[in-house]
Length: 184
Figure 1 (cartoon, rainbow, N blue to C red):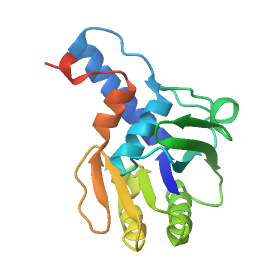
Figure 2: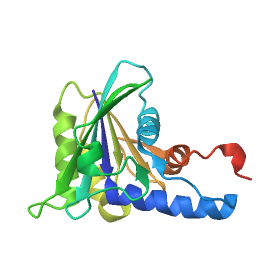
Figure 3: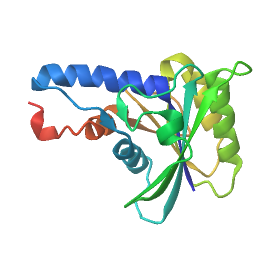
């Protein structure tokens, strides 16, 4: 079993920033990012390689945010929560979690990662969150997960132990439909 944890506001901001830069470079409008494509890329970056996988995606968002601005599909309740899709990497099931007043986003994500890290069925954990804002808490949690492959995807290098790191920009560019040959 694999888990992907996504800070929705963070990844939406990253996609927007990359889109703006790519539109300037390419001289054309870039479409919204393909969420299933991006999730497949994240899974590949996290070490998922066969078609017999079950991957749970947890999209954590602020209570007032109801949809992605830069992904399709976008609406958390109508299009994403409780939905699933099958790909060449297996089945991806999506659940959306609004942050309530009783916890912060970092507390919620850390607790969720702790829970799946203790589950013996968990093989891989992939995390895309705002490392600049609450990265130390995330690193502390993932460093204590034993026997699991943990990958953090971020735009900047991360210091720490107990996890792998992948550059978030590559998966975002793939989800935006940008090929390396287009970049000069």
